Amino acid sequence: MTRWTLERAKNGFSEVVRRALSHEPQLVVRGGREDESVVVLARSDYERLLVPKDLVTYLAESPLAKAVREGAFGDPETANPFARRRDTSRPVTLE
Image 1 (cartoon, helix red, strand yellow):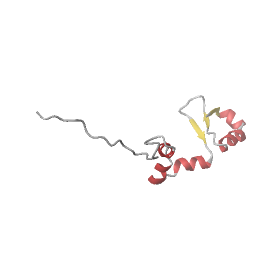
Image 2 (cartoon, one colour):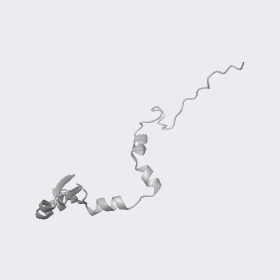
Image 3 (spheres, helix red, strand yellow):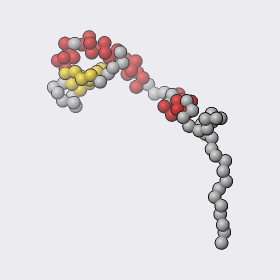
Image 4 (cartoon, helix red, strand yellow):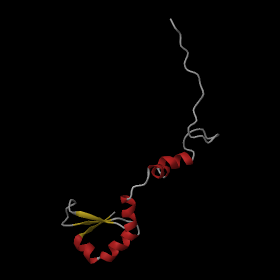
């Protein structure tokens, strides 16, 4: 994220907007204080942050779902992401 002072941002506002529209958030700081700063975003980026997705869509687009689709989990031969070994339990002796 590019950091701008308020004066530089005012003088180069078109550049701030151009970079924000190319999906690069721009940080504008007033008086050198981080607590007095704003972030300039493209409207599409802002709406993506604001609008909640339904749970099914959110989970389907998650990094974990992508890893499961790519076969990072489970048995690679059967492509079953939830494959488990079929073994018996440990031997138990009753005394």
